[in-house]
Length: 484
Ligand code: DUC
Ligand code: ZN
Ligand code: ZN
Ligand code: ZN
Image (tube, rainbow, N blue to C red; front, side):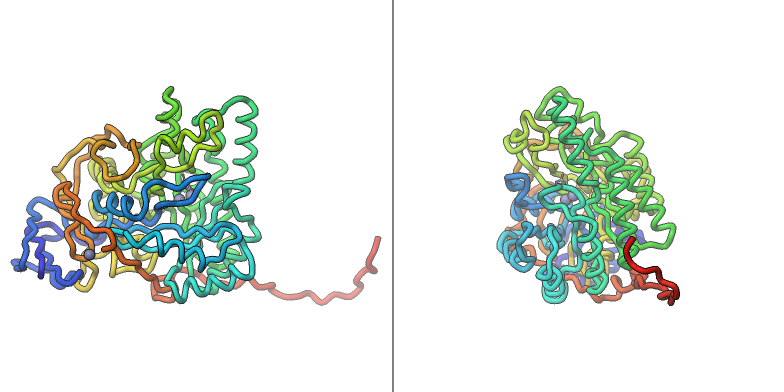
């Protein structure tokens, strides 16, 4: 059965034009004028765009003594509700656990996904086993990105020697390393200091993770990646210091991408000053929300092209889970939701304010990351042969965001009360209509794992792939005798 999306304006990362889109068997099969199909989806007055890709979610993630509450069922359903048709989750081996063993767990967790998905692999410890299994992860499982935590000391954090070893391995395999860039040693010191001084509330979470810890770690990761001859993807870039390091690297010809979150673009540090403990704790995430100066820097980066992708780090904990940290802010599970609201929030605060054009919106919510992950144009495109992952966005449709009406399984929303204008009329996941004017009709199990080729033309072209070799060994005479 064919479907035709009629009378809309197609917006891709590089073109805006009026045409109909014919969908068959989960793919786009024709684009043109006056097309007919078995079922008609009316897009009059709407933009027809590639579905959003959120490259940064944590669904049912084991973290800080609990699991994030949105799982692959509720989390991917929430994604579709907001126009996101693919998510990438982080497969997270516990230190000591094999990578392939962890993938098995993630395979089991993801059987009820409503939209297509992929995994990044986290490197949480280093050993010969990890070194060897990375090759199988890339070549057999189609996972071409490896995430490294430079924070969460004593848990997920890896040190510089491990970063360097893993980055070199990524270079050999044609994979891209990613970093959560915060100086975990300094964060741990600051956490102890604030707790010792009696600052145990959620606001101290933000004090313990200032922009400097992020800027320092971002710069360090960029330099280590450069020495390993590999590109680098910096997740959740939240501040000017980190953005500055990325901007400088890019100007110097390095392949480095920065990923601001929609939360950091639209919410600021005043949230932690709220006298209501629950309100502040619900917004505890790492990195924390920043002030307006940093927000402006992130928006400028999206406009100027030094930042490439807008994600969410969707990692949703209930209020009850957040309360594990009453009396000790270091025990508040880190994470906020966002996957459902990313597109409407970015459209409203980006396109609606003139900071982004509709084409730039498509680039930063879908196409850029599809290219980085090497899944373009299967994903991130409105082209014949591409997957029919499509959002038909009605720029006049409005709502006020509220936990009462959200698809996410948690009991609050960090964007509560925000008025958004620009919402999906239809969302299609591989040709299946998943959302019609707010009504969700997606099915668990429809989502498929998307393999990502490591050696495709996109990734190969991204890096300088230089080798760090000793220029020459100096032959010397008159070597002094050893000893003092
Ligand atoms: N930051 C969060 O806030 N949650 C999940 C992991 C992370 O790095
Ligand atoms: Zn992170
Ligand atoms: Zn994350
Ligand atoms: Zn299906």
